[in-house]
Image (tube, rainbow, N blue to C red; front, top):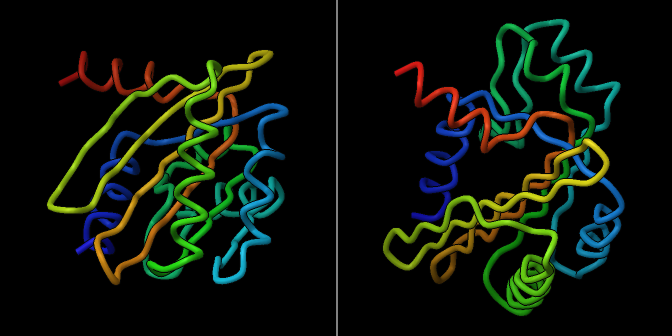
Length: 167
């Protein structure tokens, strides 16, 4: 169910052309890659630029993280990090660490959603003209817990507002 929820959120975010950025807080999230049981994928600026040039999406397995056939949105993305784990000690440690970081003053909650036992949090911070958006999906029992950190210059809150005004 959580994987389905994650896919729904990824498609939703792709539909509003998600693109993001960040500052010094990035290092706070890097430590999660060292948790035993956490799978870590990093997509750097060069790979993002190549995807934008070729009209491709940024994916993690079958899940689309950022979909942008025009490449316009991806040009504003500097970095993407995905942390994934199954429920258990690793997921508990990841959850506690992420929630502690998101309580810091620099993070503003954009969306908090619950579907069944799965929870989704989308938060954002701004620093020196950069934006860091965090998508955290806390899975149900025996499902994946996923953290996506996307860095760049595009403000997702403003993008969602523009999208709503166009509809």
